View 1: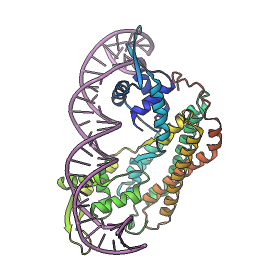
View 2 (view 1 turned 120 degrees about the vertical axis):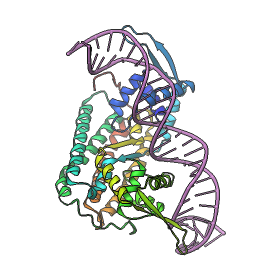
View 3 (view 1 turned 90 degrees about the horizontal axis):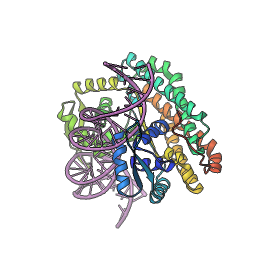
View 4 (view 1 turned 180 degrees about the vertical axis):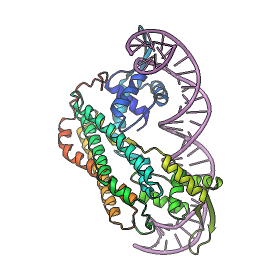
Length: 183
Length: 183
DNA sequence: GCTTGCATGTAACCGGTTACATGATTGT
DNA sequence: ACAATCATGTAACCGGTTACATGCAAGC
């Protein structure tokens, strides 16, 4: 699902400027998708050109002008299509797990450091997701997403905390891995 | 961590051809990183040009010729550096969670379908990771990675199975989400 | 005076995916 | 006969990240 489609989705929730869309990405999506201005503004241009959103310039006192985008009926329908036709999947790119995979090539101190840092990062996410789940204005789907994120983060923290000691003690045992054996 | 570095890492485990490296990606990494030939072969060319790996042509009877790549001492050191200096993080891009987030815009049937498909995909991953964990030749770090993956997948499956019914019953309650409220 | 927040953009770059091209051998 | 496995590559394309550029208002 590309950023263009995601912007369209956010605009199906309510009208917004590019700046606001970014905030929604940050606040509501950040645990499963990221996006910066460099992809959002061009995406909005394309959506406008395709007639899926309309754009109206707003003057504001004591604040910079802003462009308010609204979904057109065609845009709403387009998003529904894209949403239902997408195949539900997840792409993960974990530098943390790369480090664990090659842990026997790291020093014990550096390994401990990587584990600590990542644990802290996860802890931050967990706190954030716990605060999100308190909100009363989430749709059932959004709440589901937050619970899913929370369960995932908790499971990860649990493994890290339970296995950390043992890993640090024997990570240098390289063994011989046979990748020719049928996995 | 880019594919070039990851190839170098695999070659730190044992000498291999591009084709074999791809198999390692598939069999050992696939749950946290992906790569196809289109990125591996160019990466190996660059590594060779930089003197981080050496390349030797092998003739084989009854099989196509292959290029056997080996890490040089410089390459091994380069990988150790990259590994320890990388900051441990994870990037997730979940079309599944996008669908859940906008579940109120989907039909009940399509939503059920998305949940079922994704559940099946996770179940496949779980079975695969369980078979991996049986292996006796994994390093402690690799075993840690598999356990981490298994715990994560199990937690996800658990949420899906526990919340599926309730979500399908009331996903159409759109409510009014206020993204201006401080999250 | 400095930082933070609001607000919009662009251009270069990069890394990776997809699709295509080739070809022998082995197993069903 | 047909599909799968081994084996290497290229070229086009695409989507996203990074860094830069600008500017005003409010609060510390």
